[in-house]
Length: 66
Image 1: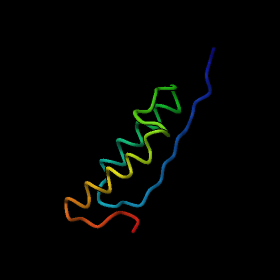
Image 2: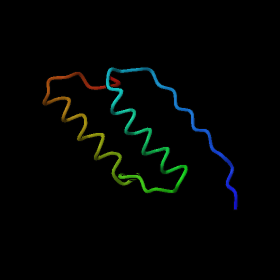
Image 3: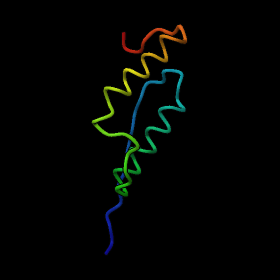
């Protein structure tokens, strides 16, 4: 069976950490196009956000989006 081709377009404003965006984009695209599982799911979102904020705090960096 032929599958239709998918076009995924992601736009973002560079925040200086394009590697993070690239890795995230590739994982998301793989999940959409092939059904590959994401490494984290909704049950991890809040914990991951807290962990990222804590890493920024300990590094003396301003929190993103604040």
